[in-house]
Length: 78
Image 1 (cartoon, one colour):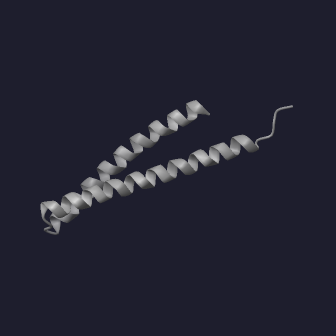
Image 2 (cartoon, helix red, strand yellow):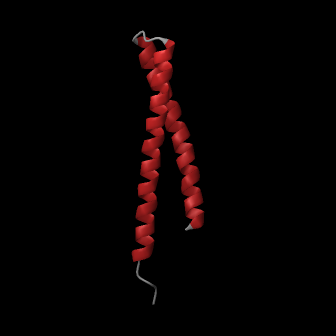
Image 3 (cartoon, rainbow, N blue to C red):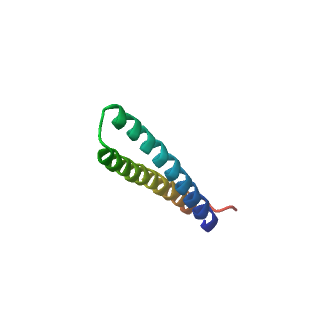
């Protein structure tokens, strides 16, 4: 289970980085098109980063819980 946690944590970090980067770019493009100033764009980018990170973390925690539940409830081999 420890190796699985390490792999999933690494996957979470990669997904968080990718999702945050995409979210920041999306927000920046749309806010810039709408004429927002740099301070507003910066704040929106930071909010997008936090949201993406929180969503990925919650998703990975749910996956870990499902795996842990599956492993503790499986039938022992006879």
